[in-house]
Image (cartoon, rainbow, N blue to C red; front, top):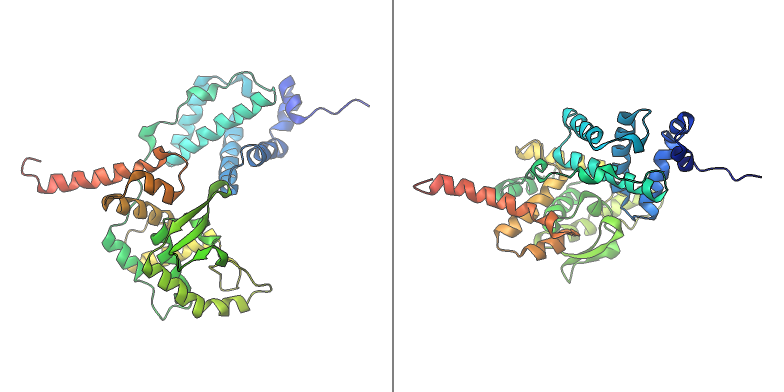
Length: 317
């Protein structure tokens, strides 16, 4: 019996029926499997690349990837701009397309990668939203004892700012990741890379109070106990959406900028460290950035703050 050809082999033959077949769900899923097994990307990154690829496939319609030129891909970039995507999202979409073409090259579907010359432009990168120290203080003290889960919420917000961890990293913290006497946490970052993150006194006190008080009540509501530090009202591990809602609630109460998100606290953490004289490499390690270039955006944030000070106070500004 003849061996059945894979979908990507059919794509390489370029028949119309093959293009229609592989441009569907199976094609999409094959690429995601490659990202997980070969590239070892974190699940959130895989999901984001999956959305980017779906957008690219919809734009490509019935055309074959090997027939797309650099000019065509430039048109795709134009479509991304017209859809009002954030600059960082556009850059990520281009990385996803470039990685997709590399995958097709490995599978023998295409011989060239036209996406390699479509660079992710640094000028698209926006300066992150950063809270001032006064805004951070207003935000962290906006939790009141009258709030239903105030012990958990206060500990959650303190940890976000004290460690600079990503939302997913905070949601996946486990009890065995805590080393409060040594004043650090073990964080599980992108690609399941682990790092030790220092944590300050106020965050430690908030965590210890939460563990002594309301966490046991939340655990009792679950069908099976969880080792996760931060729990929902049903006793299950808190997810990113719930975390986002908690942050938004206290942002509104504090009366600060409405566009602040959990990631804004990470940006604020890094910027305030650099403003206080921390070394860029040290901040990179605490944030879990693989490249120092990713951390350097915070030097631009601090530089913009210094420019405002210069304009306000220099006699010849």
